[in-house]
Length: 231
Length: 248
Image (tube, rainbow over all chains, first blue to last red; front, top):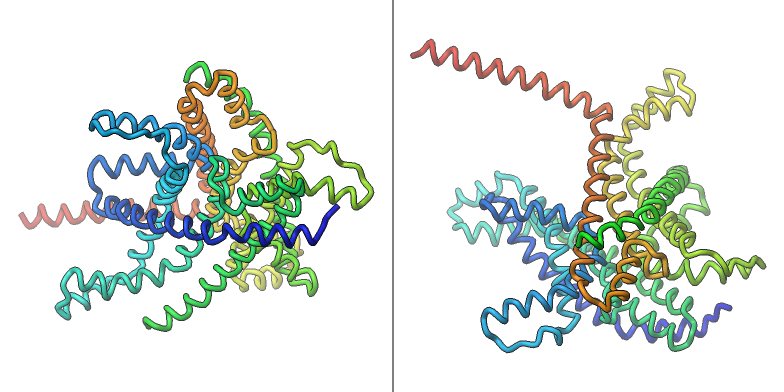
C-alpha cells in the first residue's frame, strides 16, 4: 500500500519547485511589507477618508478566507483591468493575464493589513528616549529614521516577519487552484502521474516541515544575534 | 446577487456543523495535549512537540488531502474496511487534529502565565486539585487565552472554506455548481456574495468572543477601575474649572 521508494522519488520531484515557491513567497512578503508600511503611515497620521477605508478593508480581509479572495481576484481582475485600459485607451488583452500576477496581488493585499500591524507594533515598541537622544545629538529626521528607528524596529519585528513568511508559504498552497504550481500543486501533479497520491502528499508535507523547521531555527538564531548587536 | 444568495446560504448548515464539531472536539483534544505537555512525560513529550511543529508548518489543505487519502490506507493496515468514509468525516478529523495543535499553543502560554504563587496559595488553603483548577486557574487563564481563541475561531471558519476541494458541497462547492449550471457567467458576483457571507459569519463570531471577554473577571475589575477613574477624572476637571473660575 505504502511504498517508500515512491515517496523518495516524489520528494525529489517535488523539491524542484521549492526555489520557485520560496522566491514567490519572499516577493509577496516584501510587497506586502511595503504596502503594510504605507498603511501603517496612513493610520499613524490618521489621513481622513483613507484611514476609514483601510479600517473597513481590514475587517473585510480578516473576515474573508484566502480561497474566496483568490477566486474573486482571479475572475474580477481581468474585468477591472479591461475597464481601466478601456478608459486610458491602451491595447491590452486582460484575459491573457498570468495567474502568477493574480496570486502575487491577492496575497500581497490580503497580508498587507497584517504586516501593517507588525510594523506599527515594532515602531511603537521603540522608546521615546531613543528618538529624543538622537535629536539632541543633532541627527536629522532621516538619520534618526535610518540609524536609530530602523535597526531597533527590525529586531523587534524579525520573529514576526519570519512567521509571516511561513504563513505566506502555507497560503501559497492555494495557488494550485488557479493553475500556479507550487509545492502542493507539484505534489498533486506527481501523484496524478503515478496514481500514488498519498506518497506524494506525505513527501510534500515532509518538505513543508523541513522549511518550517529551518525558518524557526533562523528566527531563533538571528534574533539572538541581532539582540546582541544592538544592546 | 439576490438570486444567488438564498442558494448559497442554504449550504451554511453544513459549514456550521463542521465548524461547531471541530471547534468543540478540537478544544477537548487541545486541553488533553496541553495537560500532557505541561506534565512533561518522558517519552510522550518529544512526540507531542514533533506533532505540534508538524501541524504548524504544513498547510491545512495538504493535511486535508493526507487525511482524505490516507485514512482508508491506515485503517486497512489495521484490517478494517473504511473505504466508504465520507468526506465530511475526514474534513472534521483534519480540522480537529489541526486545531488540537493550534489551540494547545494558545492554552499552554495562558496556563504558564498564571503565577506559581497562585498554585501555592491554593494548595496551602487546602483546595483539592479539581477545585483549584476550577476556581483559581481557569478564571485567570480565560482572559489571557480568549483573544487567541477568538483568532483561532476566525481561522477555523476560514479553513472550512477549503473542504470543497475533497468534494463536500459547502458554500464554495455550491458556487462551483452554480457557475457550472450558468456556463461560467457572473462568477464575480458569486464570489463577492460568498465573501460577504464569510465576513458576516466572522463578524458574528467576533461579537460572541467580545461578549465572552466582557464576562471574565479581569474585565469586570477593569470596568470598575475605568468607572472609578472616570469619576475621579470628572471630579478633577470639575475642581480645575472651579479653581480657574476662582482665579478669574
